[in-house]
Length: 200
Image (cartoon, rainbow, N blue to C red; front, side, top):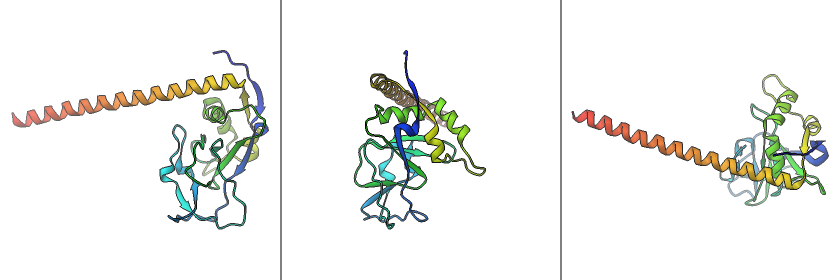
């Protein structure tokens, strides 16, 4: 696929904010009105696992930056930097302070799902690793993240790339299913052999 894309700084296309400034550990309140997404809830392939997202009560005075379906969350510390699309929300939600909250600026021709895909690919990952700082735990500062370049192809090309990425993900899922089925078949054969030898 031939792709023509202009180079632009991430911060020129996307607003980047820190997560809600919880003080200390986020307290779980089962009847709380807000869900708080943390690093543990994000997966680079499957996105946010809302089943594990805790409910809480916001105690600070700051007006929260509520998550919206077209937003992205970026894991900015640890061993694997990655971005996930928020997608459909089960209710009011914020992200924790160890995540960056990304939102495409108004009027920009950039699909959030395409941006998440590009951030998670090898070239951008290499740039993130070069830019990361820290001795005990690596992290990427917001100004550094804003300055990193991304490729911005036309919307039609972005849509084609996203469609191909989804197809590849579906193929991986099918391959994993085939492998698991084959492993179960072998386990069944091994159990039958063990049972037969025990009777001999």
